[in-house]
Length: 364
Ligand SMILES: [Zn+2]
Image (tube, rainbow, N blue to C red; front, top):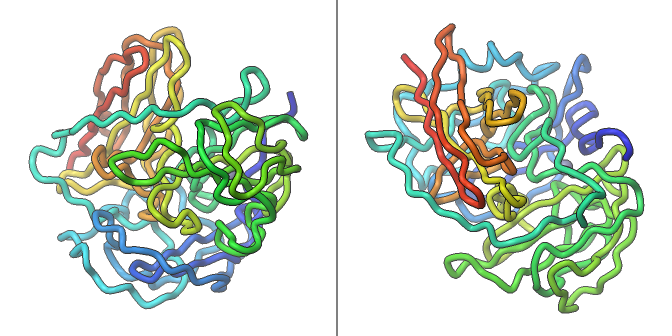
Protein backbone atom coordinates (compact mmCIF):
# COMPACT_ATOMS: atom_id res chain seq x y z
CA UNK A 1 0.00 0.00 0.00
CA UNK A 2 1.32 3.30 -0.89
CA UNK A 3 1.76 6.17 1.41
CA UNK A 4 -0.74 8.48 2.82
CA UNK A 5 -2.68 10.40 0.21
CA UNK A 6 -1.95 14.01 0.07
CA UNK A 7 -4.83 16.42 0.04
CA UNK A 8 -6.07 18.33 -2.90
CA UNK A 9 -3.33 20.26 -4.62
CA UNK A 10 -4.97 23.63 -4.18
CA UNK A 11 -5.00 23.09 -0.49
CA UNK A 12 -1.23 22.78 -0.58
CA UNK A 13 -0.64 25.88 -2.66
CA UNK A 14 -0.86 29.55 -1.86
CA UNK A 15 -4.49 30.30 -1.46
CA UNK A 16 -6.19 30.80 -4.72
CA UNK A 17 -9.66 29.54 -4.38
CA UNK A 18 -12.68 31.33 -3.17
CA UNK A 19 -16.25 30.83 -4.00
CA UNK A 20 -19.33 32.83 -3.46
CA UNK A 21 -22.68 31.22 -3.07
CA UNK A 22 -25.77 33.24 -3.71
CA UNK A 23 -27.36 33.16 -0.31
CA UNK A 24 -24.32 32.82 1.80
CA UNK A 25 -20.77 33.79 1.11
CA UNK A 26 -18.82 30.67 0.45
CA UNK A 27 -15.21 31.23 1.16
CA UNK A 28 -13.15 28.18 0.61
CA UNK A 29 -9.61 29.31 0.92
CA UNK A 30 -6.46 27.36 0.67
CA UNK A 31 -3.18 28.09 2.29
CA UNK A 32 0.20 26.49 2.42
CA UNK A 33 2.12 26.75 5.63
CA UNK A 34 4.77 29.42 5.48
CA UNK A 35 3.71 30.92 2.21
CA UNK A 36 2.05 34.27 2.05
CA UNK A 37 -1.42 33.65 0.84
CA UNK A 38 -3.57 35.59 -1.51
CA UNK A 39 -7.09 34.93 -2.58
CA UNK A 40 -8.89 35.41 -5.79
CA UNK A 41 -12.39 34.62 -6.76
CA UNK A 42 -12.43 31.74 -9.15
CA UNK A 43 -16.04 30.77 -9.35
CA UNK A 44 -19.51 31.79 -8.48
CA UNK A 45 -21.95 29.07 -7.67
CA UNK A 46 -25.60 29.64 -7.06
CA UNK A 47 -26.63 27.92 -3.90
CA UNK A 48 -29.66 27.76 -1.74
CA UNK A 49 -29.38 29.28 1.69
CA UNK A 50 -28.38 26.96 4.44
CA UNK A 51 -31.31 27.59 6.72
CA UNK A 52 -29.72 26.52 9.94
CA UNK A 53 -26.15 27.48 9.53
CA UNK A 54 -26.05 31.07 8.42
CA UNK A 55 -22.86 33.12 8.46
CA UNK A 56 -22.31 34.65 11.84
CA UNK A 57 -20.55 37.68 10.49
CA UNK A 58 -19.48 39.06 7.15
CA UNK A 59 -16.12 37.93 5.92
CA UNK A 60 -13.81 40.86 6.02
CA UNK A 61 -10.22 39.99 6.55
CA UNK A 62 -7.74 38.83 3.92
CA UNK A 63 -6.14 35.47 4.36
CA UNK A 64 -3.18 35.47 6.70
CA UNK A 65 0.06 33.80 5.63
CA UNK A 66 -1.14 30.74 7.47
CA UNK A 67 -4.26 29.96 9.32
CA UNK A 68 -3.87 30.69 13.00
CA UNK A 69 -2.61 28.09 15.37
CA UNK A 70 -5.33 26.20 17.21
CA UNK A 71 -4.85 28.12 20.44
CA UNK A 72 -5.24 31.42 18.66
CA UNK A 73 -8.26 30.17 16.81
CA UNK A 74 -9.98 29.09 19.93
CA UNK A 75 -9.67 32.43 21.63
CA UNK A 76 -11.62 34.15 18.90
CA UNK A 77 -13.79 31.38 17.68
CA UNK A 78 -16.95 31.96 19.63
CA UNK A 79 -17.48 35.66 19.60
CA UNK A 80 -21.01 36.44 18.46
CA UNK A 81 -23.57 37.47 21.01
CA UNK A 82 -26.54 36.41 18.97
CA UNK A 83 -27.24 34.06 16.15
CA UNK A 84 -27.55 35.59 12.73
CA UNK A 85 -31.04 35.23 11.34
CA UNK A 86 -31.42 32.32 9.02
CA UNK A 87 -32.41 34.66 6.23
CA UNK A 88 -29.45 37.00 6.65
CA UNK A 89 -28.37 38.70 3.47
CA UNK A 90 -25.25 37.46 1.82
CA UNK A 91 -22.21 39.25 3.16
CA UNK A 92 -20.12 41.28 0.80
CA UNK A 93 -17.91 38.88 -1.05
CA UNK A 94 -14.34 39.19 0.03
CA UNK A 95 -11.55 37.08 1.27
CA UNK A 96 -11.85 34.50 3.92
CA UNK A 97 -11.63 35.65 7.50
CA UNK A 98 -8.48 34.76 9.33
CA UNK A 99 -10.35 32.89 11.99
CA UNK A 100 -13.08 30.35 11.59
CA UNK A 101 -16.49 31.75 12.09
CA UNK A 102 -18.49 30.57 14.98
CA UNK A 103 -21.27 28.57 13.48
CA UNK A 104 -24.48 30.45 13.92
CA UNK A 105 -26.44 27.62 15.36
CA UNK A 106 -27.52 28.44 18.85
CA UNK A 107 -29.17 25.55 20.54
CA UNK A 108 -32.07 25.92 22.87
CA UNK A 109 -31.28 24.88 26.40
CA UNK A 110 -30.25 22.24 27.12
CA UNK A 111 -27.56 22.07 24.47
CA UNK A 112 -27.34 18.33 24.86
CA UNK A 113 -30.84 17.68 23.63
CA UNK A 114 -30.14 15.42 20.72
CA UNK A 115 -32.40 13.75 18.25
CA UNK A 116 -30.56 10.74 16.97
CA UNK A 117 -30.93 10.08 13.29
CA UNK A 118 -29.18 7.20 11.61
CA UNK A 119 -28.82 6.73 7.90
CA UNK A 120 -26.12 4.15 7.46
CA UNK A 121 -27.48 3.31 4.06
CA UNK A 122 -24.43 2.63 1.93
CA UNK A 123 -21.35 0.46 1.61
CA UNK A 124 -17.72 1.45 1.28
CA UNK A 125 -16.49 3.18 -1.90
CA UNK A 126 -13.51 0.84 -2.22
CA UNK A 127 -13.54 -2.96 -2.21
CA UNK A 128 -12.32 -4.58 1.00
CA UNK A 129 -8.60 -4.54 1.61
CA UNK A 130 -7.44 -2.04 -0.96
CA UNK A 131 -7.60 1.20 0.95
CA UNK A 132 -8.78 3.00 4.01
CA UNK A 133 -9.95 6.33 5.34
CA UNK A 134 -7.33 9.00 5.89
CA UNK A 135 -8.11 10.35 9.35
CA UNK A 136 -5.91 13.46 9.25
CA UNK A 137 -8.21 15.23 6.86
CA UNK A 138 -11.73 14.16 7.62
CA UNK A 139 -14.83 16.06 6.60
CA UNK A 140 -14.72 19.65 7.82
CA UNK A 141 -11.12 19.39 8.97
CA UNK A 142 -8.23 21.59 7.94
CA UNK A 143 -5.16 19.44 8.49
CA UNK A 144 -4.17 21.22 11.68
CA UNK A 145 -5.38 24.56 10.45
CA UNK A 146 -3.26 24.66 7.33
CA UNK A 147 -5.55 23.44 4.56
CA UNK A 148 -8.92 24.31 3.13
CA UNK A 149 -11.82 22.70 5.00
CA UNK A 150 -12.40 19.30 3.47
CA UNK A 151 -15.71 18.57 1.80
CA UNK A 152 -15.39 14.81 1.81
CA UNK A 153 -13.41 11.78 2.93
CA UNK A 154 -10.07 10.78 1.44
CA UNK A 155 -9.17 7.13 1.05
CA UNK A 156 -5.65 5.87 0.66
CA UNK A 157 -5.25 3.55 -2.25
CA UNK A 158 -2.90 2.81 -5.09
CA UNK A 159 -3.23 4.13 -8.61
CA UNK A 160 -5.57 2.01 -10.68
CA UNK A 161 -7.46 0.30 -7.88
CA UNK A 162 -11.20 0.01 -8.51
CA UNK A 163 -13.73 2.31 -6.90
CA UNK A 164 -17.21 0.89 -6.46
CA UNK A 165 -20.77 2.10 -6.11
CA UNK A 166 -21.76 2.51 -2.46
CA UNK A 167 -25.33 1.70 -3.44
CA UNK A 168 -27.57 1.14 -6.41
CA UNK A 169 -28.31 4.20 -8.46
CA UNK A 170 -27.99 6.05 -11.71
CA UNK A 171 -24.86 7.77 -12.96
CA UNK A 172 -25.67 11.48 -12.81
CA UNK A 173 -22.36 12.27 -14.43
CA UNK A 174 -19.21 10.41 -15.38
CA UNK A 175 -16.29 12.18 -17.04
CA UNK A 176 -14.04 15.20 -16.70
CA UNK A 177 -15.08 17.70 -14.03
CA UNK A 178 -15.53 20.38 -16.64
CA UNK A 179 -19.15 20.77 -17.58
CA UNK A 180 -20.92 20.38 -15.34
CA UNK A 181 -18.31 20.83 -12.71
CA UNK A 182 -18.63 19.89 -9.07
CA UNK A 183 -15.80 21.64 -7.26
CA UNK A 184 -14.81 25.22 -6.73
CA UNK A 185 -13.66 25.57 -10.31
CA UNK A 186 -13.60 23.42 -13.43
CA UNK A 187 -11.41 20.33 -13.21
CA UNK A 188 -11.12 20.51 -9.44
CA UNK A 189 -12.03 16.85 -9.12
CA UNK A 190 -10.43 15.69 -12.38
CA UNK A 191 -12.25 12.66 -13.67
CA UNK A 192 -15.34 12.38 -11.56
CA UNK A 193 -18.31 10.07 -11.16
CA UNK A 194 -21.47 11.21 -9.41
CA UNK A 195 -24.22 8.71 -8.70
CA UNK A 196 -27.76 9.55 -7.80
CA UNK A 197 -28.53 6.82 -5.31
CA UNK A 198 -31.82 4.98 -5.58
CA UNK A 199 -32.42 5.38 -1.87
CA UNK A 200 -33.51 8.87 -0.95
CA UNK A 201 -33.51 10.17 2.60
CA UNK A 202 -36.53 12.03 3.94
CA UNK A 203 -37.61 12.67 0.37
CA UNK A 204 -34.24 14.27 -0.34
CA UNK A 205 -32.06 12.90 -3.10
CA UNK A 206 -28.68 11.54 -2.07
CA UNK A 207 -25.63 11.52 -4.32
CA UNK A 208 -22.21 9.94 -4.03
CA UNK A 209 -19.24 11.70 -5.64
CA UNK A 210 -15.93 10.05 -6.54
CA UNK A 211 -13.12 12.46 -7.38
CA UNK A 212 -9.60 12.38 -8.88
CA UNK A 213 -10.24 9.13 -10.76
CA UNK A 214 -7.71 7.78 -13.21
CA UNK A 215 -10.34 6.21 -15.42
CA UNK A 216 -14.12 6.45 -15.58
CA UNK A 217 -15.76 3.16 -16.54
CA UNK A 218 -19.42 4.14 -16.48
CA UNK A 219 -21.43 6.45 -18.66
CA UNK A 220 -23.74 9.24 -17.65
CA UNK A 221 -27.27 7.89 -17.36
CA UNK A 222 -26.25 4.28 -16.77
CA UNK A 223 -27.85 2.30 -13.97
CA UNK A 224 -25.36 0.83 -11.52
CA UNK A 225 -25.73 -1.71 -8.78
CA UNK A 226 -24.13 -1.64 -5.34
CA UNK A 227 -20.53 -2.72 -5.58
CA UNK A 228 -20.25 -2.18 -9.31
CA UNK A 229 -16.91 -0.81 -10.46
CA UNK A 230 -17.22 2.82 -11.51
CA UNK A 231 -13.64 3.67 -12.35
CA UNK A 232 -10.16 3.56 -10.89
CA UNK A 233 -8.24 5.50 -8.29
CA UNK A 234 -6.15 8.31 -9.74
CA UNK A 235 -4.75 11.76 -9.11
CA UNK A 236 -6.51 13.83 -11.74
CA UNK A 237 -7.68 17.35 -11.00
CA UNK A 238 -6.42 19.15 -7.94
CA UNK A 239 -4.75 16.27 -6.16
CA UNK A 240 -1.29 15.18 -5.18
CA UNK A 241 -0.79 11.48 -5.26
CA UNK A 242 -3.36 8.81 -6.01
CA UNK A 243 -6.28 8.68 -3.64
CA UNK A 244 -10.06 8.61 -3.73
CA UNK A 245 -11.92 11.72 -2.69
CA UNK A 246 -15.44 10.66 -1.74
CA UNK A 247 -18.42 12.86 -0.91
CA UNK A 248 -22.07 12.55 -0.04
CA UNK A 249 -24.21 15.36 -1.46
CA UNK A 250 -27.91 15.87 -0.95
CA UNK A 251 -30.70 17.84 -2.56
CA UNK A 252 -31.78 18.37 -6.11
CA UNK A 253 -28.56 19.82 -7.54
CA UNK A 254 -25.41 17.80 -6.85
CA UNK A 255 -23.21 20.30 -8.66
CA UNK A 256 -23.42 22.64 -5.68
CA UNK A 257 -20.20 22.41 -3.74
CA UNK A 258 -21.78 23.13 -0.38
CA UNK A 259 -24.51 20.49 -0.55
CA UNK A 260 -22.31 18.06 1.29
CA UNK A 261 -22.71 15.99 4.41
CA UNK A 262 -20.21 14.01 6.41
CA UNK A 263 -19.84 10.69 4.55
CA UNK A 264 -19.05 8.91 7.80
CA UNK A 265 -22.69 9.37 8.78
CA UNK A 266 -23.90 7.58 5.67
CA UNK A 267 -21.67 4.52 5.30
CA UNK A 268 -22.47 1.37 7.22
CA UNK A 269 -19.94 0.66 9.98
CA UNK A 270 -17.81 -2.43 9.63
CA UNK A 271 -18.95 -5.52 11.56
CA UNK A 272 -18.63 -5.04 15.33
CA UNK A 273 -18.09 -1.32 14.85
CA UNK A 274 -20.19 1.76 15.43
CA UNK A 275 -19.96 5.49 14.85
CA UNK A 276 -19.25 8.31 17.28
CA UNK A 277 -20.65 11.74 16.53
CA UNK A 278 -21.08 14.78 18.66
CA UNK A 279 -21.06 18.47 19.06
CA UNK A 280 -18.82 20.87 20.86
CA UNK A 281 -20.65 23.99 21.97
CA UNK A 282 -19.62 26.97 24.01
CA UNK A 283 -21.42 28.16 27.11
CA UNK A 284 -23.73 30.27 25.00
CA UNK A 285 -24.69 27.29 22.92
CA UNK A 286 -22.83 27.92 19.68
CA UNK A 287 -20.99 25.25 17.79
CA UNK A 288 -17.27 25.78 18.22
CA UNK A 289 -15.19 25.32 15.07
CA UNK A 290 -11.73 23.81 14.84
CA UNK A 291 -11.83 22.26 18.30
CA UNK A 292 -9.82 19.09 18.79
CA UNK A 293 -11.74 16.18 20.28
CA UNK A 294 -9.98 13.10 21.58
CA UNK A 295 -11.59 9.71 21.84
CA UNK A 296 -10.12 6.71 23.59
CA UNK A 297 -12.12 3.57 23.07
CA UNK A 298 -11.95 -0.08 23.91
CA UNK A 299 -8.96 -1.86 22.45
CA UNK A 300 -7.74 1.19 20.63
CA UNK A 301 -5.19 3.92 21.04
CA UNK A 302 -6.25 7.49 21.70
CA UNK A 303 -7.26 9.25 18.50
CA UNK A 304 -8.63 12.63 17.60
CA UNK A 305 -10.91 14.46 15.24
CA UNK A 306 -11.47 18.21 14.82
CA UNK A 307 -14.82 19.99 14.75
CA UNK A 308 -15.99 21.42 11.44
CA UNK A 309 -14.21 24.60 10.53
CA UNK A 310 -16.97 26.60 8.94
CA UNK A 311 -20.51 26.59 7.65
CA UNK A 312 -19.66 25.24 4.23
CA UNK A 313 -19.21 21.72 5.48
CA UNK A 314 -22.64 21.57 7.08
CA UNK A 315 -23.95 19.37 9.82
CA UNK A 316 -26.74 16.87 9.42
CA UNK A 317 -29.94 18.89 9.71
CA UNK A 318 -31.26 16.75 12.55
CA UNK A 319 -28.15 15.75 14.42
CA UNK A 320 -26.45 19.14 14.23
CA UNK A 321 -23.14 17.48 14.90
CA UNK A 322 -19.79 19.09 14.35
CA UNK A 323 -17.60 16.02 14.51
CA UNK A 324 -17.87 12.38 13.49
CA UNK A 325 -15.53 9.45 13.89
CA UNK A 326 -16.73 6.34 12.14
CA UNK A 327 -15.78 2.71 12.47
CA UNK A 328 -14.98 2.46 16.16
CA UNK A 329 -14.95 -1.00 17.71
CA UNK A 330 -17.97 -1.47 19.98
CA UNK A 331 -17.26 -0.71 23.62
CA UNK A 332 -16.80 2.17 25.98
CA UNK A 333 -15.28 5.43 24.76
CA UNK A 334 -13.99 8.37 26.73
CA UNK A 335 -14.38 11.54 24.72
CA UNK A 336 -12.52 14.66 25.81
CA UNK A 337 -11.60 18.13 24.77
CA UNK A 338 -9.70 20.94 26.45
CA UNK A 339 -10.57 24.57 26.80
CA UNK A 340 -8.49 27.17 28.58
CA UNK A 341 -6.81 24.51 30.66
CA UNK A 342 -10.04 22.75 31.55
CA UNK A 343 -10.66 19.20 30.45
CA UNK A 344 -14.21 18.34 29.47
CA UNK A 345 -14.97 14.64 29.42
CA UNK A 346 -17.90 12.44 28.49
CA UNK A 347 -18.13 8.69 28.43
CA UNK A 348 -20.27 6.93 25.90
CA UNK A 349 -20.74 3.41 24.65
CA UNK A 350 -20.29 2.51 21.01
CA UNK A 351 -22.82 -0.08 19.92
CA UNK A 352 -22.44 -2.32 16.91
CA UNK A 353 -23.92 -0.74 13.81
CA UNK A 354 -25.21 2.24 15.78
CA UNK A 355 -24.58 5.93 16.18
CA UNK A 356 -23.51 7.21 19.59
CA UNK A 357 -23.65 10.90 20.30
CA UNK A 358 -21.97 13.10 22.89
CA UNK A 359 -22.18 16.81 23.63
CA UNK A 360 -19.18 18.60 25.08
CA UNK A 361 -20.02 22.01 26.51
CA UNK A 362 -17.10 24.33 27.04
CA UNK A 363 -16.98 26.52 30.15
CA UNK A 364 -17.19 30.30 29.95
ZN1 LIG B 1 -10.24 15.02 -0.58
